[in-house]
Image (cartoon, rainbow, N blue to C red; front, top):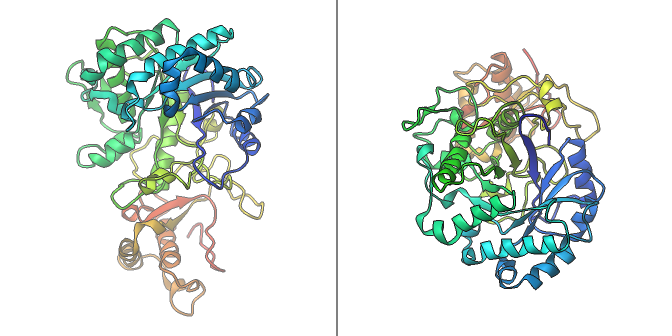
Length: 456
């Protein structure tokens, strides 16, 4: 997190994986990145113990499967708080309890239990004299909205309003808490690539979208989504309730139909979002309320189910190497030129390049273009043919018998050709894309003994 008159950046630490570093290593990683806010999905004792004395604020969760019990009796939540909060607090800076997660889309239909569970958790915190320091929230999915476009017409689903939305918002207001919302422009973009521009989804320069009802101009899809929730709250009379974006992110890899799930786009979305949060004000509808955001997620999680993207939201691989390099703090932003441009594949130059496997550090100013192995053989082959033909790349080194022929794989050869094209074009924006078949890296690629030029 970085704190100023602007907003704050935290990160979600999910653990649906069998290859993650130990919790104490994770705490060190977060500290090294300057992150001071983390959100968990449970109250694992090993994890909470690791954060003891770290100075990192922690959001913990009471999972959906415990909502019915938590709603049924305060003795259950008394016991839960006694077991999962009191032994760790305040050495571990637990400042929020997320009661449930995206409860309205839970297939087990736990909606009816949500507000009673939140009230019981709060009563239990009061009983142990910690309610003034620990907020009780519940992250909503954006699908809780019935209407979200234009933003000013934002409204909650009518069947949720009386039974759960109004009572929850009233509870949040009474306890001086805030609404948590999980918002993913990625999903809106892949469902509407014909009408939503990638620049608008990525916080890059674009002409903006004007709300016809109030004339407000939106320059990013996330802000439009956030304001749709604010409008929905305003419609119910909760004009002064604050909001935290409890999850947002962009995957670095995806299935064929998950257009735009690339490392370059993930770096652009998260990098530009961090810059927007740490240097900007609020949204068009609430300009004086800073954006507070938790990125999703810290690691790629290999045991998550669903499409490929689900396992590829991490900023880090499980070995703690960066999937891509973006600044996460005010300090980091100072070292990096702005990325708010019209290019569809601008990659941020590394503010502090990750060490390579041998402990050496790459030159932050250098970038290379490599093939995206997930793009599929046909796309790679077509792009390789273009680069070596019409594109004018120097492909002699990948001919049989030449220095870069081995390893004789499509990905290795395409990487060499793409990089040659990119460097020959003076690393101009847009010259390392090839329709999603390529992306930029900040460390010299390694394919056998082949050396990739960093300039021509």
